[in-house]
Structures are given as C-alpha cells and as structure tokens.
Image (cartoon, rainbow, N blue to C red; front, top):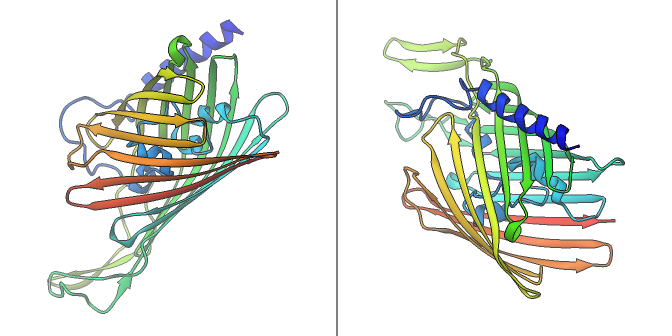
Length: 334
C-alpha cells in the first residue's frame, strides 16, 4: 500500500509538471483575460466564502466536489450526503449549486455536482445607443460533474472529477469537457494536513453560433470565433489545529493559488468550531487586484439521530464591485 501511495504521489507531480503549458505557465507578466468560461472560478458554497477560498486542505463536505475531489473522503460516516447552495452575485446574477455524494462498497465514494449561473435579461447597448437598443440578451452557464474518490491509507486520499461545462451568451455557445484532480495527506502533528488540486484542465474549443455586430458600414453577422481555453488553476494548501479541546477547536489555513489566466495569490484563513454546533470563519487573499475587506462567515450544525444538518453563510466584499452573500444547506443521512 505504501508503494502504491508513493507511485500515486509521483504520478501527480509528473502529471502537473507535464501540463506546464496550461497549469504552470511562465511566471511574470499579465495573463488576465486570456481564458473563457470565467464562471468556473466562482466558489459555490458559503463555508469556503467565509475563508476567502482558502479551503482545499480543510474541505470535508460535499463542496469538495468543486474545490478538491479528494476531500469527500473526509465526510462523516453517513452513506448519503446532500448539499444545496445559492450565491447572490454581483449585477443581480444568481448562482445555484447542488451536490450528492454516496459511499460505495470497498471504501470508494461517488459524487454528482451541478452548477447553474443565470444573469437574467440585460439590455443590448452600442456606441450609438448607450442606453439600449430595445433588445435584450442573457447569460446561461451550467456545469455537471461526476467524481470518484478513495482513501488509500488512513492518511492519503485521491479524487478525480470529469465535468461538462456549457457557456451561453447572446446566442454564442461553448461546450467543453474538463477534469479536476486532487490529493490530501494527513501529516498528523497538531492535526496538520496538506492538499494539492488541479481544477479545470481541458483542451481549447471553438464557440458555436452567430451574432450581429453593428459597425460603421452597417450590421455584420459574425459566426467564426477564436478558440477558447478554460481557466485552469493549481492550488496547494496547508492546515493545522493550534487549539483542540473538548469544547473548542481552531484551525489555521494557508493556501497558494496559481491560475493560468491571472497572477499568483496567497491566502490565509481560520475557522473556530464550538462542539461541532457553531462555526465562525474569517479569511483573506493577498495579491489580488481588487482590494477587499476580509471575508467572514458562520455556520450552525444540528446533530440528528440519522445524520446531521448544517446551515452556512459566507460574506465577501470588494471595494468597487460590492458585496456577495452565499448560503449553503448540507445534509447527511443514513
């Protein structure tokens, strides 16, 4: 088993190194605006929002289907777990998320996740009609993913997710098959653990459809588009528990994020746990372009005879863009 674990660790390192063109581009310079499907970068749950996305090393609920597929191996012993989340995003955009994880015989776990973003109707504007042409358009983005994860030892777990993403904007549609991969390793000292994840790895694809563009010579129909890549991101996270008592637990978190379409960032966070009933969270991300207040959130969990139920809230604020509220309901049964 130890040999198998070492082989998987080595394979993960070689795999991420081999993807250097997409996951680990050259450092320096601006990469902003170089990929499509930006909705894939939006966090889906309230707990991670309260930690400002510094989450891959501590995630142990259904939201791991988004952050780090290996994290679902840390779920409670119930056989079936559900999670539902909604995000009140900027510009009246709504994001809904749902996830299901089921334990399998043999120690593995299967997960199904669905995400949907809807902008509602927006006015079409042009240089000559900046207040609207009378026409409207909308954005509809969706994602469905299938995950398999398994603990190989008491300390080491891995997970793999295959996803189908669809981006639709003003009649232009882009479809792509993408993959996530993650590992977790429990070091043991003071509850310390280490995690690595690669999210949104896929090939470039070409959008389909057509759109009418107003130029000085009149309207022109455009139906040929450049290939679009996905916003892959490589994350490394570390967490430990500096305080653990019968009543209280504090977890400290650090995370390095390396996206393919922006500069590297570093984040820190902390979570307070009172008897697995009340949770308080705070996080901050360093190196971002848009200044922000620290993120914060809270959660309440109700133990039940047949499982558990938890409600989480997360708050994020940006100086120019405003605030984001996230709500998540998690349930474990049987």
